[in-house]
Image 1 (tube, helix red, strand yellow):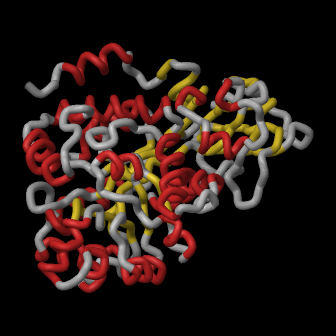
Image 2 (cartoon, helix red, strand yellow; image 1 turned 45 degrees about the vertical axis):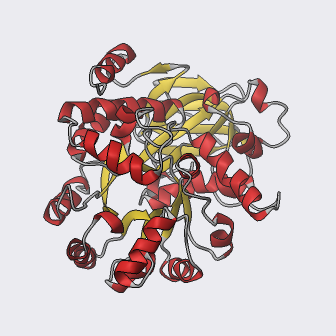
Image 3 (cartoon, rainbow, N blue to C red; image 1 turned 90 degrees about the vertical axis):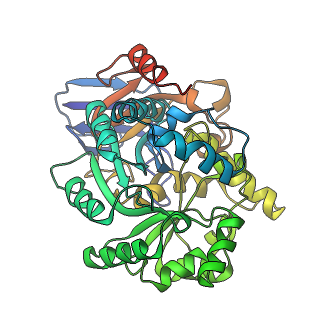
Length: 422
């Protein structure tokens, strides 16, 4: 399908490229032109969309999530992390059916789309059901291995790695990963490190989320989670840590040296009282940074606008410096940074030759006026109400409040409410 967007403000997210007025042309799943109207090639179109001066930009990439955990939204709130996880989440997850995981994932995808998120980095058990939900709806998903002592296995993870990284699986891909050091015994961790070296692939995991996690790892191995995992060869090909709240200087130097991604999740860390990650310090060291929402059981909202505001706001508070974290850097973390953390290099910017994953921001709203600075507005006053359209792989999946994902909203809501826990 060939689609032309015109009369648009365009934010490509290419480095040092300012917002400009022009057109974006789509052919099937690719962007074929981004530029001024004057230089735009003439063609015939299946659809022409007048953007009316609104903003086209790359979609947000949710670099850490547990999609099917929408099923646990508001089920286990106001608890400490350890109580939340071991007394509530793990027992319920042992009861989830394949069908429940599918519909919980569809619900999450709807929330992603209405919030301008065009890809998710999903860590959850039995990922084949979330994969089916992604393909059925047209959503782009990168899976992260979730092996631990209770679920999954290293051989299964290797099988999934080959399955979802098949070049024919355009919307799906896979990265090696495990839940966390504290839920995974050393023998399994060493097997994962060996698999990483065999495949020459990065590894991702929850890392240094709480003080308790770090202190218990020190008691077991005499090292922090980050340095322990490095000592067994986990980061020979890079990777990433989700949360990374309680990081030592040695941890951060390791991330700097090996270009290990830090994916911050400020809403979840606030709600579970885990702490505030030292993002400003890590940014100053050149550590690669990205943003995720975490799952709806701990957030409880899959909203990148809220995450962006908290990334900058919490760093200002933590550092007692209103200049601590520039909004434009945070916007980069939520788009191109997260894309690169997930291995989605073809989905990072708006330019010819990239995948047609983009969003249209409604600027004709009170919270986006006046337009002194569009990018600052996005981070400091933007919200999900400003998402007019979300396109993935050249398909418009959400537009003006309506979903085009092959299933009606009412059915999704009925399905997820039928698996309420009693």
